[in-house]
Image 1 (cartoon, rainbow, N blue to C red):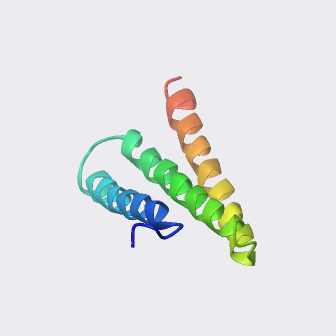
Image 2 (image 1 turned 120 degrees about the vertical axis):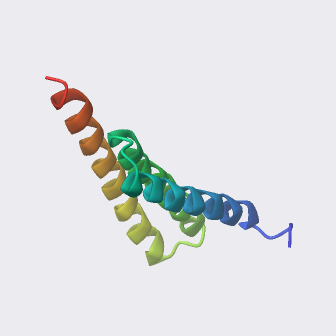
Image 3 (image 1 turned 180 degrees about the vertical axis):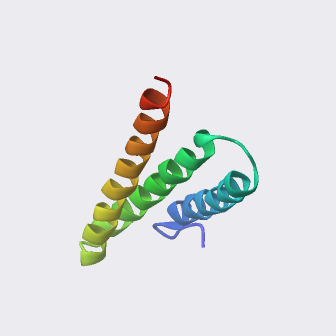
Length: 90
């Protein structure tokens, strides 16, 4: 099983998915501020980026879908980061 081509990408996806679930629970039930909310989108963007890389090697249509969602998640992260950290401090 260790010799499979995308084994380590799947392990990283599992770790990122677990981290996203934990951070989401902390952000919803705690008063942590905006930092954890933006981290959910950042980690989601990295997870989608890994899936895009994984599917680009297969040259599938799924890679295009993952690429679109990657740009979307990084865009949401950038908006949340900009809005709360730069416009919220004025």
